[in-house]
Image 1 (tube, rainbow, N blue to C red):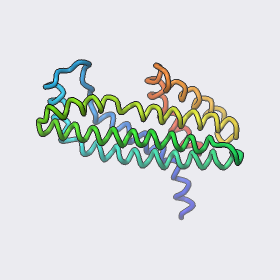
Image 2: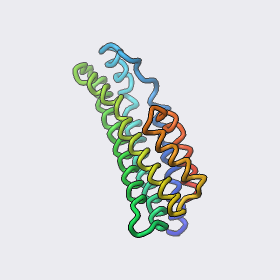
Image 3: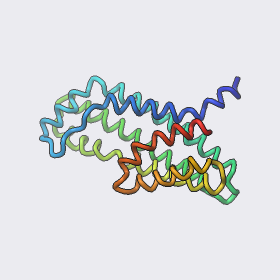
Length: 196
């Protein structure tokens, strides 16, 4: 029974992607650049009813990402040389991304609570912070993918068809093309979940 459950653990990457699709779908539109303070307040006040659901989904996404990256680390570590560190770096990158997602959920919950309470002085800076929480998520995913790709190529832990795209996506995430990398990253995570 435990062995059968252990085979399902790598599929946590798929669960992560599905959960994040739910978060993004429920999140709704972002504010336009240069929105007035009252618009910011109204935006977050309108989300105060659904924010707890979004935060719960974000917490589940964090859990699924950490489990996925632990599986990825295990697969890389099993094939790399004793002195190699790609598995640890990939794991660290995944933890950075997971921490960024947790931070995003926390800031969004705080902003929606401030909006729901009509606290204009708090909601505007929280909105600015909420618009920047993509940075640790993107950087963490980039580190995870670069390390997984390079480690997968050097050790053979990942097929080249999965390792090379990881390197390319990781590099893209660190450039202005990061949006494309961010949109394609879930496909890589799903593919690797199946491979593991």
